[in-house]
Image 1 (cartoon, helix red, strand yellow):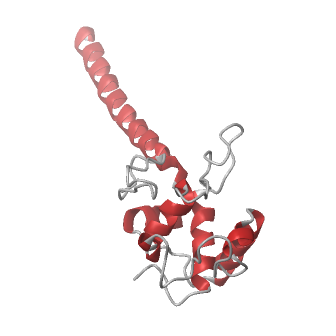
Image 2 (image 1 turned 180 degrees about the vertical axis):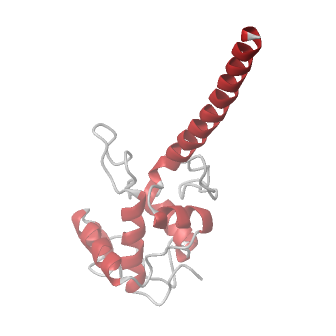
Length: 174
């Protein structure tokens, strides 16, 4: 009789261990960003796949963007102002002008873009994150300077795009 109770207890423990590991597995999956639906990104240089660690899409806005291509910061004044600060901090203004109108480098306001894909927020994100053949280096986190990692986060990049769009009639979310 005691053997049967012991066997039943062991089976119950094993069953609960399997449930715990599944729950832990789901938590680890969520932490790793594996549950994020991600659209395909490509480099502006040659159209090759642009791989960005899903963990970098760590805010609700970044998750919405990578799933839909829509920038939720468009039209949000506080985020636009944060984007303007980053645009100035990273000296984008030196080449692209004080409002992204263009100077030494191309204008970012449109409707005529050097890279037509920049009319969309997905395209502009790809261009800012990974750079261009025309001389602009990558601004994405870990790409400007890999050690120690430097560059714009995904969220900061979306704010910079929101600021650029605030100076244009194009929202990129069309």
